[in-house]
Amino acid sequence: MIELIHKILLWIHIPFGTLSLILFWIPVGTKKGSPIHRKVGWYYYITMWVVVITAALLSVSNVIRGRYMSAMYLGYLAIITAYPLWYSYEILRQKTVWSDLYFTIRKIFVSIVFLSGLCMFLLGAIKFQFQGMGTMMVFFGLLGVPAGRDIFMTRTKAMDKEGKLKMHIQGTIISGIAAYTAFFAFGGSRIMMNVLHLHHQWMMVPWILPTLLGVIYMRYMKRKYKVS
Image (cartoon, one colour):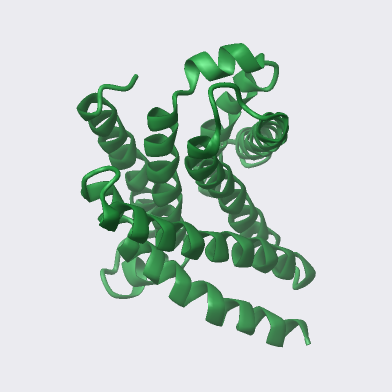
């Protein structure tokens, strides 16, 4: 039964994931606030939530099936994708003063991102001692650890730091980075090894590259729209 459920989740996850990878480039490459930006951006937002939810369920499925490493990576990617995806849209709905609900959900999210990132980092550093997959665990763990700074941040300070346009741009691009990272980490890894015949040691490159390119592009967009 669990195998059937796993396959059904994959049948949903893969096409929606592929669609989100394509849709991502339209809202980030079109004029902000334009009809196509809003419409396609909404489609991207919905497809990505389908991807995140099915990824979380697939992670649980992998735990039941005894595939703990896959479960850990997929679950972590779901977590660090869900948070920026959520605030990229919700920040636009906030007034001058954030609602209690938004601020509470934000606190919960940053706490989960921090704790999961810390666990990922410690596993890679201590258990795997920076060897093999341990190197990637440390790298991805470090992406979540900085969220710890926001756990005890007051609402006033957070509102001063996190402007609407800045967080909308940042959240959208980070969610796209996570989507491409997940592609290379799972489906794309087979292409790299079986088609391009890359040695397993080089597999870290396509995993890390989306993050590096995404950070560069995010800084470009923030500079373009004059947000810091």
